[in-house]
Image 1 (spheres, rainbow, N blue to C red):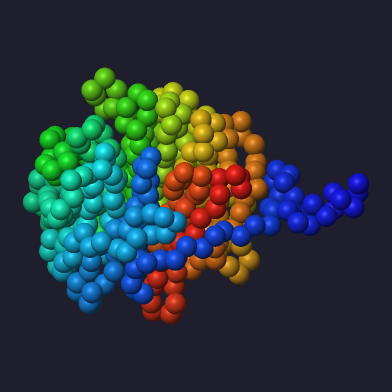
Image 2 (image 1 turned 135 degrees about the vertical axis):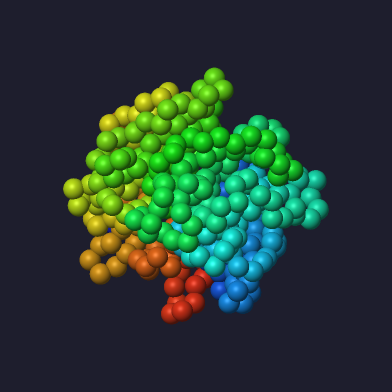
Length: 403
């Protein structure tokens, strides 16, 4: 009996909590061009989409979308291409589906200043046909920064789009001392034709360049982002749409991270019914960590935050729920002389499950923000690999039952 147990251990590894077991993610072929970056995964109940950016030249870029069908990603479809895009490792295009309709966005330079660009939307109805391109999201004409967009399906005929808006800042720079005002958080409802129905200011003072995140709960949409207090404390805040009104932003967990510059490391959130899972990076007290917290009432309040990273965390997190009580967190972490894309299961009881290495990654900004999405019985990952000056997209998946 002891020999049999030992054989099982050799074959399958240990399944005890807190220990890693032997496994290998299944690689997926990327169907796009050799030079590509900024992958974004978006999953609905019956579709998994991958968007990415590829350079046509030094000044022209193209945004593509590919759909996972018949166990492979399809040949990429061109959404739009153009000159003078703002192509940035942290502020990247994305795509979302709503009842077969599609909404994507890109960032277009509005002046020669480095951080002066606008958000332009691209829409396609479920009936197919050509994309309707370069639709304005925000109405202000200031030559300032607009980006870090999150979009979700809102009603059967509209999307909810939130973004960081720099209309109150001075143009032509990203130096905090030059700002006449702060970055703000705004939200808009956009119909499937790309028309803005309404937009609203949610927070007049936010962190400058951390990603936003949004999801739909049983009680309505919620938005998480990095707040910025008058004392430069930059913790994660939430606002919820309740009975037609957005709640006053509140901090989901007081890390107390005081930093005079933006860490470029936003939160991620997912929901199933009233259950919400949030993850974020913090370096409060110069102790880097990835933290997670659950909510069982659509984000009205959250459980005590738990740190899951085991080494020198870089953040760049993503999340997906497995069921009402369990979810997965992905993040980047340095261990010894290498940087890894990690993934770990968490649950509402705070149990520690094994942390797995998905891939070795370049720690520089050029590798961007890895993506993770659940689709069917698989967890899909997308990230940017570096080969000298060139960049290419890598794809892999792991069965849900692995965790």
